[in-house]
Image 1 (tube, rainbow, N blue to C red):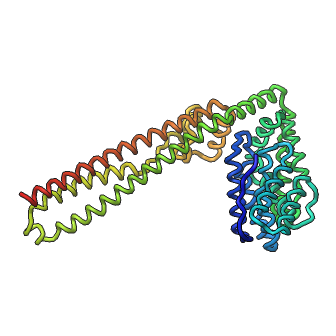
Image 2 (cartoon, rainbow, N blue to C red; image 1 turned 180 degrees about the vertical axis):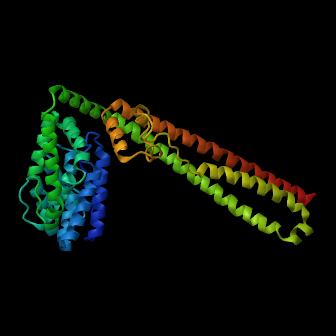
Image 3 (cartoon, helix red, strand yellow; image 1 turned 135 degrees about the vertical axis):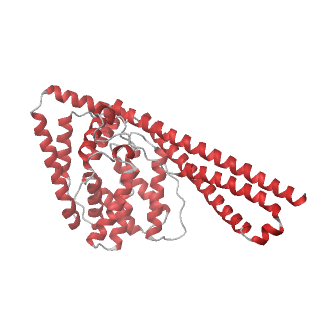
Length: 405
């Protein structure tokens, strides 16, 4: 698959080319949309580019090296969209096409391509931009989020490479990756080498701890991982992602509509009260009192229902005294777990992550309760808009009757 690019008429600034590169890469991820890529995602690509910037600032590198490393970072993961086992060729091909189409400086383009080649070939980078790129990728992959991303990395390899690991094999594989992780810039060494070393210690301790357990325990862990893989299936991800996005969008729409009614009614009620408060107005034309009173009363009722629709309501159904079986069934909404102690919350979350049925149940119940909240919001909004419509019409009709009677 090829990506069409439109050449610009002249050289463009660093900010412009970086923005264009980001948009180009985002388009590629949207176009390919491979649900099996759960680790090397657009989000990770963005994190790499941001880490390049932070490392460049921390090390005080020149703008030229900074720019080339950031642009190279946007193309690190795009090759995996086309050829997971050999991403280098496609990443470099797309980068060359992109920079050629935008008439980017050939000298800078050569530096970017060289940085990408040294990264994929795992050679020691000879340029500053190559070192920055390598350090940023390693920092994102093996930094503070290493253990959170580890199941995604493992699942991605199973889905795309059909490589299946036992729990111990996976730990050994991770330790080897960490041993091969090298940092080149000064700040990267200071910030990330201790983190990588700590990860290795943790993995080694986990291995030693599991060695003391029976083989039956290992089989149980494998079953748990298979359960994790099932709950991360593309179909389930798409279903819950789509439904959560829909619920959030509908909630935002309801809040916006409620804010409109609150603002309109509050302003109009204030104006009407100010107008009828003048004594000469009511004395000289008492007929206007009736439509004014109708509008104030109906406007106030409409405002009240709009406030009820927008008013936040936080429910809490579990606390530290709640039985374990009941507590772990309702962990998704923050109002349910804020009253728990951290240790208790971690225990319940661990229970949920180890049981796909429980995880699905939590997400399903959360969607249900979100739907109940939306139902109440839209019921209040419907009443608010109906009262406003009827009240406004009644006010106008009463005013016309008063004027022409």
